[in-house]
Length: 607
Image (tube, rainbow, N blue to C red):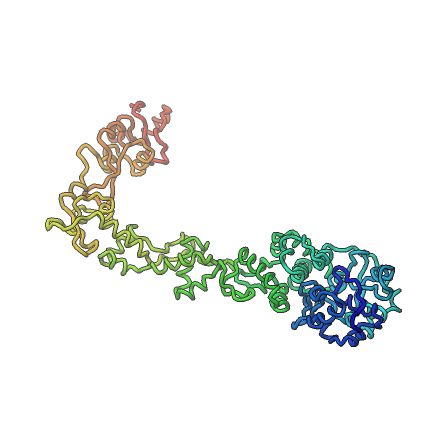
């Protein structure tokens, strides 16, 4: 035979189905006989070998590309390529299984436009276990079992003849069935239609099917349930439930992940703890590169929403997470765990030194900041060396507040941590610069060192340095390269700055003496503004004191008088004065509990 009698190739019809009809149209009892007659390697042709397909194309006068595009290609890894898309072997029925819609076969038999015996053809969706409903007749797709099917792989017509006696029962089994949206999606993709959201339209059909199966199982039946262990109807529910989410696009896909993911696991958990068997299935059972898009989508979304730390297992080691742990930072720096925690609390990255379970993470972005602070920390000896003073004077600066520890006490609770002997080198250098910029060089021999200046001013070491920082000294000099210890002061300038109170002013003691005020009364009257006073730094005192101008005192004493002063002047007891005040209904000028004595306005005198 030099040429064959060709038969029509229906839209979306697989090559093996067409060849089975071709065999019958050319009087062969089955495709096996036609293969042998043409000298075609049957096994290679059924695997989708292009050379063998080209030989058949030449016999019927068809394009090699046209026929190869319809081939069911079996790949080296046992996957199958159908309609240009590759599927795992578990997704499709094998060549020796018969799965079909009896009503479609009956329709084929009634097609008088085709040669009798060459009318029955395979529909691509019959090959897919995930499609259980005929999209044309809306009936159950059935599967026949017979030992004779083994002899006719991919030969639909011959296989149907093997089970011809069972056809009435198979027709009865093909009951009406509602087609799910997921099944419609699979049929659409097999026929080249894409209209299922920005996620499903950008992945292969196999990836879309797998996503619906795995995510649907985890959502409906829990993360620890495997899809393969579900019943047939449970599989249908799982697929369709997930599809309802994923068809909405990437947003629906990530929303479904958020429902599935464990939110009660420790933040350092990897993919297995978060997604259970969904994760292990993608890691072990779907290693093919095309499923990488699923792994990457799940991984990237999870890392954006969950504190998965670097070093965790999530489809490989996590190295690009935004989170790490205090322990990892301890290992990287060699610093004390407690020191790091106190530093992170001070920086506001931890709520407390003692963290609750699941709250051990910190942003990677703050690690460099923390490392910078660690590298910047120095002890008190180094502080003294930088400032050019001894350790005792450095301690004075610490107590006076000119320098502060990097980590401070967090309050008065039982778990508050101790003051740490670590200070910021940057802050110490800044302090030194603030002091030195207000000095002049070279120094006159008439200037005195800071130790003598402190005595002349009768102030503290910190007090005189604060005056230097504020720029109150105009002739403060410094010896070269000696730091604070090299500061020099003009005695005359010290005398003018640390002045005595003018003669017209009264200090606190004098005011209390003249009016016989209690200490509590003086404090209350000044704080409430009844007695005008100014707090200044006297030469005679290390600390500021209250000074009251003579005129302000006279103004106050002309309005108010204490019972103690009246008693002293009149020789009448304060108790007697109190009884007279009550009898006459004279009000107290100020609350007695605030001043610890009785004070009245002079307008009520004499009592």
